Length: 466
Ligand code: 5AD
Ligand code: SF4
Image (cartoon, rainbow, N blue to C red; front, side, top):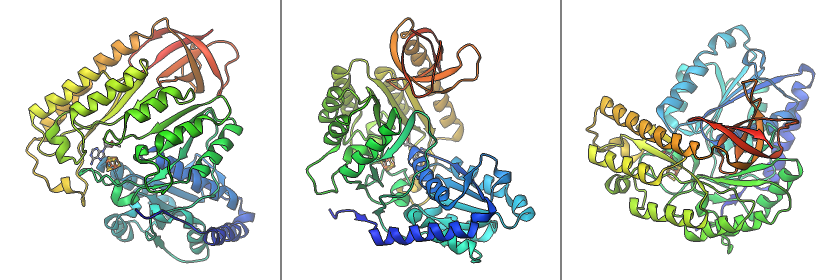
């Protein structure tokens, strides 16, 4: 397998020159930028890089789209709903563009990497003057410069599967940070658009990841989530003797008091070796997001997932044997083409047997260009919706029981935000990533505390600082 292409020093240097060039164009205007991110954590991490570049150019960030000089939508193409929302948001800005023609509206991310969407934007959304795909992110400064110097519309969806190190990042602050360890996906699950819009898997070098982790820890971040579409295949493309379990051990050795999380894992690549590393590394949170998608072997085969329900359950059993308190979550697709009542019953059975703490359930959404989009589909939308609701009801019962089991427990929590209610003014997370509302003296975001769980509901635990 070829080693990933790293964007050269010289290419990056050129972009830094454009950052300066943009800065001198906009300096006197005190410009403001607004960004909106759809989709997954990888997109959030990408937006933080674009915000980092904007910040270096002299833009101030704003949460009010109406006062922004630069507006960016970082889009998601995983389901139709996300695409519709992005188009809706851009459509709603046409009046703003008419009132203030100097406003720059930009679109990037997975939708922007697809030819069909590019054509649609070109034709029907003249208010968009800048569009760039996932591979062009690092070229953002030169693209923005072209718009600012008079080019009417700049579109760039070119580029290869590469890695750009050293781009500036502007994080939201607080307790949590994302850390991308790899990009792209090689799996080609038959329903999924990601491999087409994010390219092949490529891993960042371990020393770059460790360096960024050290910086995050020094900056005070307490919960760092390692990101990749399939982190379990980390390192396969590097030609070094390192896999994801080794990376976890290496990062666990970084000094400091913090939790390491990671997502997403693929059952075909998750292994006892990984769970052994998780169990041994005290900074690695005992939490696992392991999407199984369907409990039916026939559906799994047609999804090209390359494991069976029995293999999945074996993995979970091993993880629980090593880490009895581990928190488990998963993704499920309901209504994949050809899913029968019997297939769906097997999904329900797996959910009841494993008893997840959290499920992300999705109705299948056909994505043009993927194999499943042309598979025969017999179930009606009403049947699919009914299955979806049965699944939610079954899961709610399980969650209620699992949450109730926390009553009276003493746990270590990380305070990560403020809550709405006056009685429990802060939010926190357990090591297992469960949401907690907290009360007590001297609470501060970014602090670990010991707390006792006072009551539980379906969505939240309530705790008092000890
Ligand atoms: N339709 C519905 N859900 C999908 N996912 C990915 N592609 C689709 C699709 N076409 C879900 C999978 C994946 C999660 C991120 O999104 O469950 O794990
Ligand atoms: Fe999509 Fe499958 Fe890759 Fe996940 S592993 S991003 S579901 S193709």
